[in-house]
Structures are given as structure tokens and as C-alpha cells.
Length: 261
Image 1 (tube, helix red, strand yellow):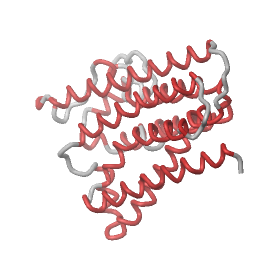
Image 2: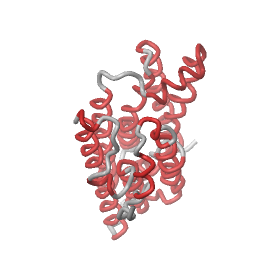
Image 3: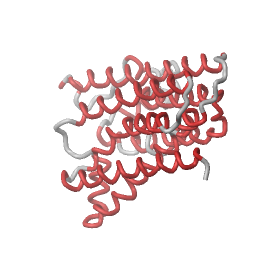
């Protein structure tokens, strides 16, 4: 077995080991929500682990690790701050109610193992760029990738900041956030994630990771059709009755000027 596949296998085992530890903590705390803040940190671990598994490196690999670290740690710290002192996320609470006494075991596979495999797979462009260490010259695709990453980081971080300020005002209880970036897209944070991972993929192209295209595609599907927009909006109208009107005038994902009433 080549060094590349050995290293990828080691990264997978490490990802799953982290998830087993998180799962055990969730059993002790009776709160599966701790899986969410780890999402960003998991990518940081994957990036730097693959980086250290190669005896040689490249400036492009260092840049990718730095970009992943900035994104991942910001996301994890934000989610830790947002969830501090709160009950288990309603999504997991509903799963716990639905599965009853079997939830402790089902959560291991449906939440923790699944998340461990997903982050290992989605981080593939970074890992391949680190492990192959191709010393290709910088090009316009790298520039576009960095700009796309920067656009995504802006939308995600500013969107989170605007929403947290909105929720901090008791007068906004039950209301819909439709100002700032949220005026142009119903999910600026998800759109930001989308841009970040396509930007990272573009940077990794010259490092020999072109074949990892399925990683940003999977991330896009998750954000738009599975655990992102679709899952969140399946229940949000119950908690915010005005959301239907907001949905009619505001783009669901890609930023666009709101339509007229």
C-alpha cells in the first residue's frame, strides 16, 4: 500500500476516534449537540495531520492548512459560544424522542460516525494537496480560489454576527432576520461554506487534487439539499410564522436582490 493511501487511512481512523470520544461525552452529558462545534475543528485536525505525515511540503499546502484553520476554528468557537448553556438542539431532541431508548446507539452511527466519515471525505482536497506536495507555480486559479474563500468567509462570519446580534434583542423574539446579508439570501452562512470549499478545491488543483471534485460537490449537496437549507426550513415556519413571506421574496441560497412584494 502506498504512503498516500496509508496516510488517508490513518486520517480516517483519527477522525473516527475523535467521534467515538465525542459520542461517549454525549452519552455522559445526554446532549448530542456537541457534535456540531467539532465540525470545523475536525477539518483542522485532518489538514494538519496530513500535513505532518509528509516529509516534504509546499507553500500551497501551508496556505491551505492556514485557510482551513481560520475557517474551522472560527466556526467551532462561534458554535460553542452560541450553544453555551442551551438545551440539546431541537433536531437531535426530535431524534431522541423518535428513537427512544435506542437513541444512544443510533446516534453513534447516524450522527458521530457519519459526521466523521463526511469530514474525512470533504477534506480530501486539502489532504491530497498536503500528501502529494506538488511544487507547481502559483497561477490565476489559485488567486480565484483565495478570492472565493475570502468571499465565503465574509458571508459566513458576517452572517453569523448579524444573526447573533438580531437574536440578542428580546424584541426580535419569533421574528425573521431579513436585514444585512440576510436580505439577499436566506442562508448567507451556508452560501459562505459553499464558497469556502470550492475555493479550497481550486487552490488544491495545482497540487494534484483535481480528482477530488466529488468532495466540494458533496459539501454543496449537503448544504443545499440535505442538512443545510432543506432540513432547517422544514420546521422553521412553525417557530417563525413570517418566514413564508420572507421565503417568497428572498433567494434561498445564492445572493440576489429581493423580489418585490
